[in-house]
Amino acid sequence: MSDIDQIIIIDNGAHTIKVGYYQENSPKLIPNCITKVKNEKRRLFIGDQMQECKDYSGMFFILPFTKGFLVNWDIQRQIWDYVFRNVLKLNNDGKNRFSNIGLLITEPVFNFPQIRQLMIKILFEDYGFGKILITTSAQLAAFKYLFHVNQSSVKNDSDDFKEIKVNEKVSIGDSVHNNLSEMACIVLESGYSFTHVIPIVNGYKILDHTKRIDLGGKALTNYLKEIISYRQINVLDETYVVNQMKEDCCFVSVDFWKDLDSARRSKENSIMCDYILPDYLAHKRGFIFDRDKHKDLNMADFQTIRMNNERFQVPELLFHPSDVNIDQLGISETLVYSISEFNPNFEMLSSTNSLTESTGLSFCRERPENLKEDDEDEEEEEEDENDFDEEEADDEEMNEVTEDEEVTETSNADDEETDESSKTNRKRALNESSSSNTRTNRPRMNGNLKQSSANQQQSINSDSNVNQQNGASSRNDDKEIVENNLSIYNDENIQSHLYHNILLIGGNCKFANFKDRIYNDLRSNVPEMIDIKITLPDDPIIYAWQGGHLLCSIDDQGQKSTNHTRSLFHKYAVTKKEYHRKGLDHCYTKLSNYKLSIF
Image (cartoon, rainbow, N blue to C red; front, side):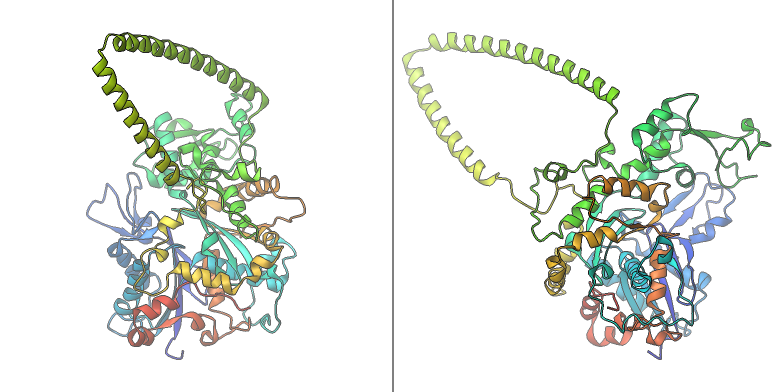
């Protein structure tokens, strides 16, 4: 422990890197990309160097992450080199090796074993860190949240985020906590690539009940680009500008049909706004035009985009992915489905049944009565057309049958015998095939929901499919964790505890009305005796990093430590000596799903 002089914390997100020293209260946000621009073709901008660009139009991004996983290591190493040398200004021992520095870094929830192994190799062999700890953003966020729950008993939302003073001592570990509500929470992480629902119980992330939705901020930005390009001007190459437009204009609708009706009106339209695009002379970032604030601006001098129903239609994808033909559940349904699996009497749903059919939940947007009448009229017209088409098809079949009968009557006796024998053989073959199909095509009960219940981590969860060389997979580890913590399933109030501790993190949680929409959806489908409490931090983007800051600042007794050598970081971290003596397999196993808690 004495060999480590400093600890740095990196929340290595697919969109931004949150990085800083453990003594700092807030991190620096560095774009996790390398950018190119049209007017400076010979130069690459690494990380926050893009601020030196004079013109952001047509900016091209080179990302180390693809579909939420770190795959381009050459790009990532260039960004890390820039962060270590230019942003953090780390001191090395002369060989580009940070042997006296500890590193806390995050990874995706369902990370591939090969990616984690390669990360361990690069951090130890190329950078030479003395200690490393790899965890997930959800675990760090849950660690900070549950720590404050136990510290202040969560009297109100503001009490959750009071910072601990440097010299303040908190003796939480002295008492034994038997209340499950102080050890269980469910984290909704909606980031750049994916949206995850991760239950955290007693310091463990329960992977069997973790769900994933294949929608994130990147998909929302691309969807907004397509809408604007189709309706107004071509902005398919303006990812950076459209992303800023999404952040400035979009919001989550609490009442979708009411807002849609308001957007259709010409006079009393409170949704519509004009977004002024940047000219990179007077304004490097676009903004919403306000007649009261911008009286001196002449609209004719700027290029504008009119935003109407796009403002709430784009974030609506998170709650109804089927709007863009993604056959998955929305955020609210996924939360209910994940929590419902903690019931001891929970039965896995068939792939042919939906959540709403089996539980009676109604998360769909209720259409107004006038629109329902129009839908009924359209359905009646479609039924009449279908009936007419069926009558025509029946007439054609009757004509074909009569023609066939005339042909068979003119055939000879020998042909009749051969036809009868062939028919009998065909019937036998059909009977055999149908009986075999009924045996093989019988629907199976599985843990998926239409194979689209945001539970597609079985295809991504390489910890259970690929890593045979490391002994036990994370699936087996997760089963052992569940077996060792069976009390969470025996507790009849486990679901109510999770509903009472819902934590929102990630950039998409900054949409206006995001928390209220989730609460309304859950409240209308959860029994009244269950108290629903949703916590949205002041800054959900850096909340996981703050959890890492807390992890490196307290000891195993929950007391604030002025010396990092006594912090919990050293309890879970892997040293460089362990890597060289015991090998990569030992480090991989130790950095797998471990208990991140002081209780």
